[in-house]
Image 1 (cartoon, rainbow, N blue to C red):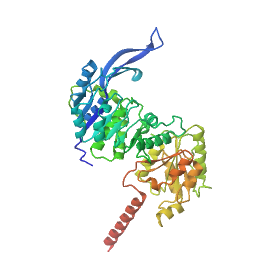
Image 2: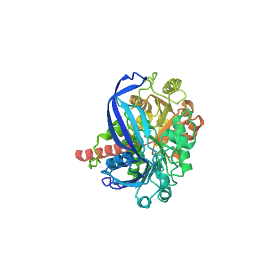
Image 3: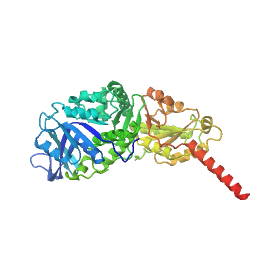
Image 4: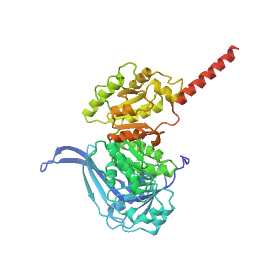
Length: 492
């Protein structure tokens, strides 16, 4: 990866909007209609659409050029004043006034949105074509108003790093590295039915289909507070949000796309870029979304560089366990799962030896729990661990491993399997989602085909590099040997 202190320039191609928020208080209804009266409204302007994505990338400390349709109407002039201190504008000819989105908010909550302005990109320019062909990295922020369409030939010659699509826009050009639709958009683009018992499964299938149909490198479906699902056309990586925020999500998609494009321009791998984009978008929503940015003065040139509680019925007691067929812990897990399913919840399962619990395990289990409504951990028996890891393992016997796992707030139940792989136990439990750490590949997961049989979905989760029980045990053994050797020398 390139030096993180030196941020690569970014070219943004897309449809700019002017966002206008009118914020006040609503404490009564109008006498002539049952609608709230918003008093003391304060108006704030901000960039929207591709202009917001470009503005955010510039605030990250990047050199940014925005190619967009801009005329000389009042909204276009206001947007120029907002953007010109931060970035370079290359204007395409426009067919009408700049589109505006006006939101009326009371106590910080939107009541209504009014859209106006019919402007679209009328044609490409030689300057814009040359900028696309010379760009180190391109972000297409398509809001369905023609900028990507008129430059499609140049974009095909120089496939973008990121394409943020819109239902009214065209498909991304083949060869685009990463496409970032929202979940509803992904299903609509893929022609997937909205009614699906496992929403994550439907999203994963839609993402895989889009990778193939669009002939792009990857698709990251943004899932709001749940994070994003990254697909290369086969096996998805689910990147959970680090925390949930109830703030204004307006502009979160632009923040996601701008961050991902910038990180890819800097040399990041696609999964690293998506993880960074999820974290940044989460913080953006927590800080108030696009509305929180409009306190910035337009003339400033300064560049600024959860788990829900589980359902009742999950006892945390129990003794040593044996094979799955007679294990009391597994029976307990089945009772919990029955309760969750009866209330329409999503059952998530994760598996492993969990011999020496470390930060990688904890991060994985916390992330897995945020996917659904309960988490059951499928753990290898002592005999199973011994067959997999060799003599001397496990370091901790099964009863201890179960006790430690149950002590984690994110774990709702533990089940045990005695075989080398958990297929038999999974067939018994039938979870909706099965998760493994991101260091696995599809070839390592025979469980994936099993999950397909009952409509479940297998996903990878990001994993902390360099953490493993085997490495931890080796370091402990080396430290003990060194201490023994040192002690013997002193006694001599």
